[in-house]
Amino acid sequence: MPCLEITMPNQVPDNKSSLAVRLTEAFASTTGFETEIFGIHFVEYNRQETASGGRLWDGEKGRPFIHFKLYCPRLRRTVKKELVGALTAAFAEGIGRSDWKPVIHICEHPYDNVGVNGELLSDSYAECADSRYYYDLPKD
Image 1: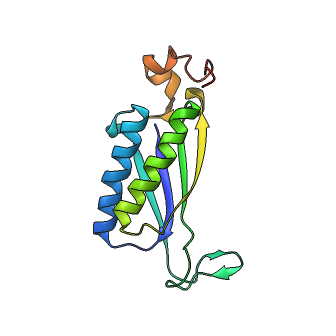
Image 2: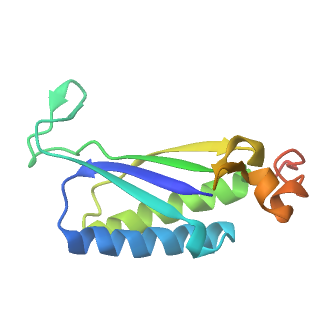
Image 3: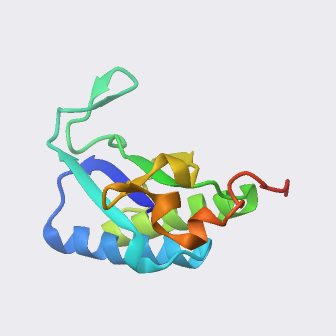
């Protein structure tokens, strides 16, 4: 099950709701996964709890620390390029700050490395068990 963990400054619920919709749509439209299986976890912080370039972020000047960790099955390079652009644009639109850009780490995994409902994903869903997509990834 693909999921996204977002570390960012504290936000009002409306911003998080907007982000949830926009980021889910960006992920689903780019990758082809269903929206229902995509999860998002917001990790928020207060000003002066992160630093960039050796300076604490004061909440006003400079760019805050914004980090995305995306956990998903292996994706083709062309899909990753499109996805990184789509997630960055969705974040800027959802947060209303075009100058805030996330660093995005894509953590790919085979279906054998994910547990759902107490079982490996490859044992739980026939389409995952029969899929060789992770292992037979053609070059772009």
